[in-house]
Length: 225
Image 1 (tube, helix red, strand yellow):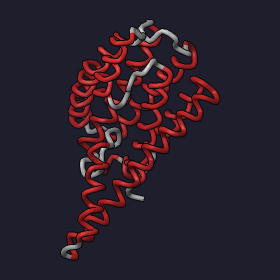
Image 2: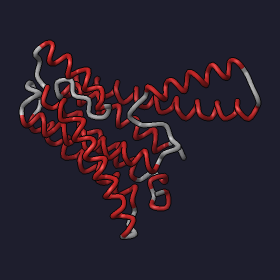
Image 3: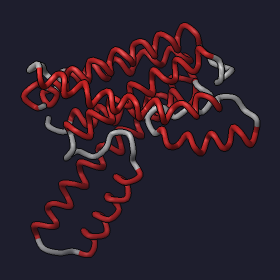
Image 4: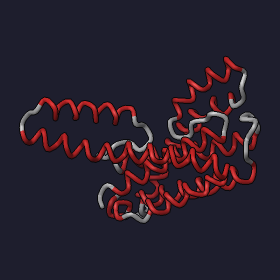
């Protein structure tokens, strides 16, 4: 199924973002710009996690740059690019998950264990964002749902209004793809919240499993980028 990979990545991103938010004192690991909001809240209420929220964006940016340079190096050596990036993300999710299980729950978001765990997970999501933008450019983003939701509502309005058959068909196809991504992201959020309440930081076992499934989808094959 052609859309399986973007949907799996959206499911994983929603899961990791929610699990990270709950375990790491309000740190967004995928939607890193959201940390500006939680940083303001942490400063206003004197809660912990300020340093991690300050570090999240620069760490994210540095990893995206390194990811792109890594892609060029892989291309020069004739190695599979996209699957290699997914493998790197898988490795970071394993390390981040083991760290969360070993050191969590994190009552102090500014402790070095919480910061290291958070930055490892931020790095994993940075790789996913960079890889998605380059190799799945035609698919809806897997970590940011605001723009996707806006487009869904525009397509709904266009279909209600009516128009040429070709534009209507394109809107229906786009609506189906984007709705699947938003639903997968929301499902990931819900499952992560439920499992965190049930089993705590052991919920971080699931993200590497999702990435392993994503890595072996046909769309991630070397011929696909």
